[in-house]
Image (cartoon, rainbow, N blue to C red; front, side, top):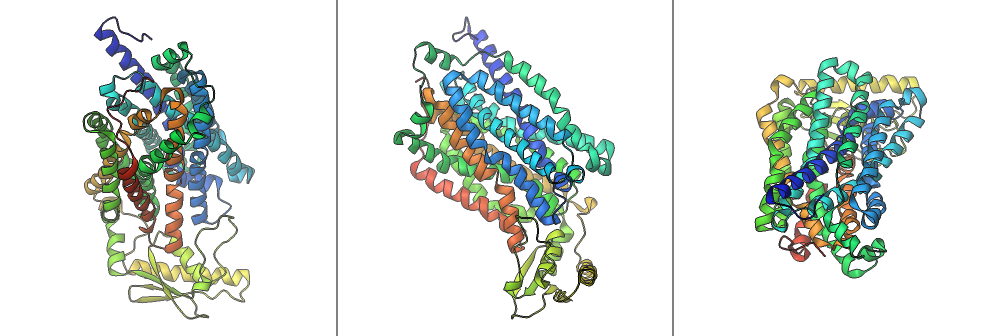
Length: 552
């Protein structure tokens, strides 16, 4: 690809090809990666059925997060390769690893077929995907930025920023189409495999597109002049001058961007399905509509950052999220499951029990069935039912009691009971609790006819607009912070620690917080605190970069 144009038309065509090819290939990678997140509820049943339901769902989210856990290591591995041998060949390798790992998930036998080998293999495949994705983003963002004019870098790289959302959107469309055509029962049994299997076609298309690209002109010029780094890891992280910028980028921009992104696009989806009991198809459709409405915001805020700066847009997005998440998610509850919202307001649920009898409703080992104390029996039932509850302390020796408004449901004292008797007593308690909840207006599931879809979609759209504010300018900011010779390595690590750890672990952490407290909104404290810290650190330490040149 020419580094200098014959005329202005040729330059524009070359730039468009770079953006289109880089973006389209990355869309397919994100499609692969996000299929798992969309199908977490089904995957928890397929691969983690050996533990209780609440733990299985959190395990499924943890396996989702496993792919994010290794992204920083992928960033280090492939970032170094990208700075040594070039941008293009590096992201060809990452794409191949990602695509083949995704295809393999579609063929993987379930827990019922091969036992514990199923979840272990699933996690290993997720780790491979995470390593590959750790090397992908930095390469694509750097590649596009190094083709962009100085005054349009935010605009050009914003197209790369759309790829995560477009990949999610593509995955939603495929899942919704297959789900609708075959029905929920068949989809849950085997149809969920189809989106993974057809990804092999997307892999072939993506590889073909990427092979048409040449190396970045900035990297090519640097290589011809013999200025490439001989030890990019040492330069990037062992020298305080650059390491300081890496840390400022992480805590003053990327950490907040990450939690806003994953709250708006993933936690919102899981919250609809798990906490508000909205059926998967309806939740997917509402998220897809919100994404379709808000996605142009990535390009708008990327363009705007070329005019007023990257820093202020990102920090304003983080601040708005921290200030409004609680009212927005409460409004989402009211719109998506009005019966549940009314019941929680008019007949709040409390568990009256001695603290020593109460376990956190998440067991990392998967051995606790939460049936050995009266408190665990009560809380386990409420957690599985998606019921928010408060805790009231009682004296030692008290048998736990569930209060639904003014109605008291006596708990079960399992001490001294054999397995059969204890099981029958627990079943009796659950039936009585269901009757009490139904009488107070608590629904088993959200009624599709009662969902205020316009309001729910409006709230989801606002959440995604926040995502576009923080994510649209982030690639240009990171590219401009670091020198060309170690750019791929330096920008990839803070990006993937932020998005892999702070963002990727958000659904797991937030739902574990909900399980620990019984409050369906309590998990929001995680993104709120991280976003607020980013605002403070960013205001104090993050430099503005939008007028910098990057050819150095």
